[in-house]
Length: 82
Image (tube, rainbow, N blue to C red; front, side):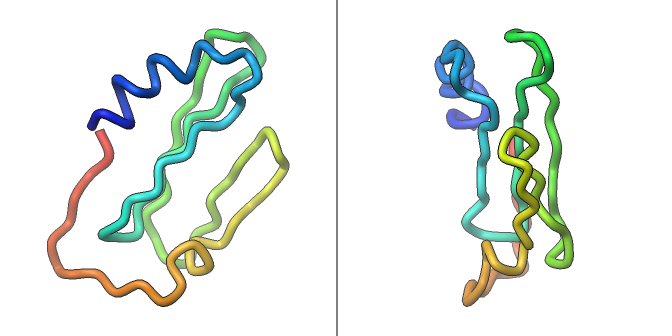
């Protein structure tokens, strides 16, 4: 929760920051905050399926979730990004 809320509050002040990515360590779950056209407007996207691609708009990249989590095994317990 600290990374997705309190820490982001500080990072978003960096004018050069375009994408803020949180990768969950216990399950397929990635959150991406992306700066829109203005300096104070951010969009937020969740990626949860192993067959999805994580989009990083400012870099024009689509990273396969399967590549981000290659070799990882997860327990049945699920968590969320706040």
